[in-house]
Length: 283
Length: 262
Image (cartoon, rainbow over all chains, first blue to last red; front, side):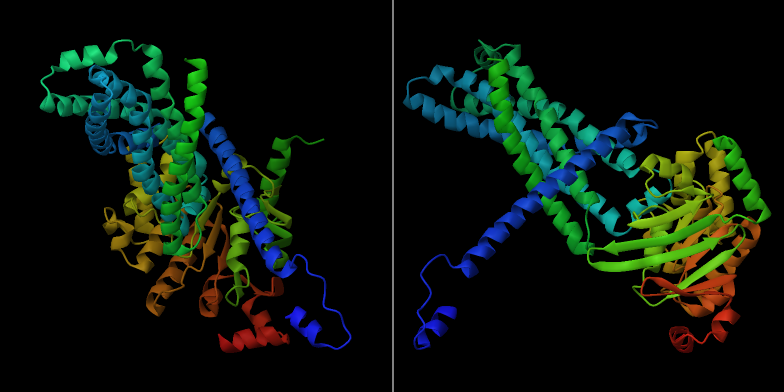
């Protein structure tokens, strides 16, 4: 607009070509806005985490609610986690068999399945399945309570909502994730063996002996315990997203979706970091 | 120099004698972003007194109640409950103060996964642990009988009407025997008969429990029925405060307009 206007006026030189603020500034400012929002979100998450930790460590302790959440998050997730672990075991067995046969290393198949499952597949599948099921559940439940003022009512009744709602859910996620991972590992290994045994006769004992040959405690314990961090991420993000919801039914939907998306994303990112740390400390 | 206990005792005596306010709000300011909601509100309510806060929708009446119970943080000013300034207190410190306060939310805010009985029992389970379960249960039945809901113990909030939900909310607000009662639009959304019943109930409870109450409403008829004094809010400030008769005699244009349209 300005260029055109200037060029049509006699005796006035058109402006020098250069960066056009009108097209650049919105891009820069929107990027800065996004960064600002992200940092603000992280800051709020930090404050939320601190409040939960403080509430969780001071009496009164909400053992009844913790027990209820252990059941809700643990027992109720078990079938789905076991199924996901079993499917992964079958797929791993089929894929690994094909690849290892091509490279003449078919005898390593049980070890490949065992190491894949206990090192990485079991923990990450558990993390992602729980972040989908539990993350959405916690996010939607707390968001619904928030928009209907039930969380305010808890606070008005002189009960700390961080202690009653957030702390038991986060703690239950932290405690149940390793146990669910064991279930995913077990079903993955079992179905991995079944998939192999259907193609080529092999007893479970032979499969286990060959699979765990050369494996030690360090191959099993750190990857299983790292899922406690996944549990912390899932519980924390789902509670945070739920308890800060605004905007009625649409807000509840957004909270459930963002709980799943963000917790899955941060579980994957944490896994990258944790794998590196485990490799350094437990080579 | 008086100790904290001595100060508390003096305040308590002053309150009982009627000389000190139970709730004192001074120069309260609150904004949400660029929107200024409260612009220097000052009010006080004594024991046994009911103040109705009136005003148009969106004038910050509910925000005022939320500030008094500490659900929102004030930008400046003070809220004194029994002489103690609650602005700046931590969540757990606020909890101690809130145990003396009952709050009825505009939409009752009952816990939707709990039955009527469990809703009223909730504060008792958390703060009256020394009571046996049967004593708690008896008290809950007594409270629900007071609000006429004793025959709906096992029902979920979704199975009862809006008016019934408000009754249950009122019973829950009274569970810890508060000496302050805050009611946010207790008759909003109710038919005239149910609204009248809620008004009668509030009057009855006020006579029996002798609390300091603030009722936020835009229902002038209800305010006139239940309140000793009325405060009219406009653009974040108190335009006028006094009895209904005093409001009627006012020459202020907004007051005349409000009374004329109500």
